[in-house]
Length: 335
Ligand code: NAI
Image (cartoon, rainbow, N blue to C red; front, side, top):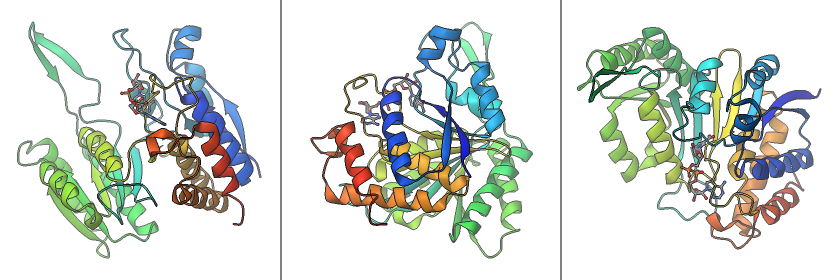
């Protein structure tokens, strides 16, 4: 069965990494047909909106989308495309698997954790106003329903992924009402999973522990702003944003995306590393039941990094998008 998937190439390096990803998926035998939609700078020019209604309609119709990076124009009054898309499609869980990769020089080996971030509320609820000139209030919205949903998601992910521990991160000492509610809800959800370990840790302490020894963590779950910061921090532990995949999951829809930006400094030069988008596509394939192809692609990424051939400059190589794509396709063979 061929599954239609909405493809949003984005802008900047987006079209370059998307073209590479499509080649690798085709060579890997992915059973998908792409339904192209636009967002980002291209959409601003054509529709005066970086996230047109037509793109959201396609995502709703086909339920699954894969998105390249999109520039958010600064100072033009546009809200972040990503934040808007997550809210419009109720993509409540951001999921970022972070694993050590072969031959990537970082201070840690054997990192294997997943950051699960609440994606729809907290300080990203978009509720900011001037109280009086010179004083601004940003509302940090925390609701029991959203807390329960995200913590349960983390536990289910742990259960189905064969993981053992869920770590809930908070700052309840300083925000006893909002994070107090989150913590109390997390404890109640944890009671439903006595076969999994549950631990709670303040966000500052977690940052220090991650810097000292990230290998002791398994599934991390947290609110929106902490998650935004910690998911990039964790990506840095294994080699950076060019390597780490990401997904935004809701009850009805799912959008998979490379978590790096549109990299205007290298856009159009053929230098972009497509691995993050390719691994996000592998997560998408798992999601739609094509685990065989997803595994083949992940194996190829590992083989390619191990070989050190054709790698882009951000990975310490002297190659470019085309050479890396070639190697990734060659390394699909034999599986
Ligand atoms: P960025 O991630 O685009 O770039 C940061 C640095 O990493 C740059 O030096 C860039 O060349 C490098 N880089 C990023 N991805 C790379 C890749 N795949 N291969 C090789 N090098 C790579 O972050 P920046 O500069 O803060 O943001 C640029 C634009 O992207 C902004 O408009 C921002 O709003 C947008 N953005 C979009 C995101 C998305 O659509 N998911 C996420 C983050 C930023």
